[in-house]
Image (tube, rainbow, N blue to C red; front, side, top):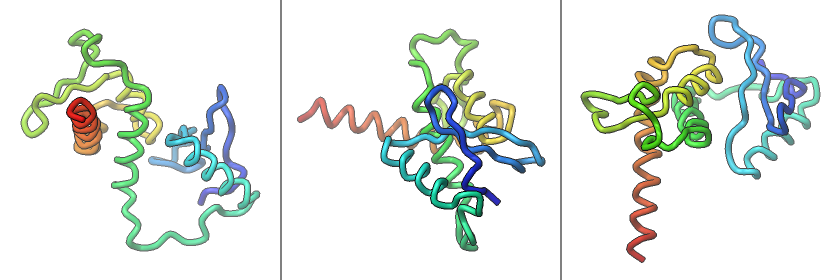
Length: 147
């Protein structure tokens, strides 16, 4: 249902306007990614004009995975270093994700961008992707110190 003219720039950053999101709510979602990714999205929007950006979405489209990837990328972009945060500013996981701590303020901003308004929604539905992104980053840093 996304039309090509439903984007704007806020403080120089590209946002997509969601007319009818979760619960029928409207919101503006920041486009995250490399400069090339952002340019691709902008060109896709512009080329659609006032028409639909996507004519049809494949039945195998895994929306949850893409939302989780978006959440992890957006979080990584805006999160503050965990070591600088007080206990109240952190979200400390338990059970399977014990040892993972995230920035509560960044989690809330990501949650709002996805159409939610609660940190626990991000924690319960998308944290597995955050952990993978954080571990991948840690592995890359470890590789860099060993070469």
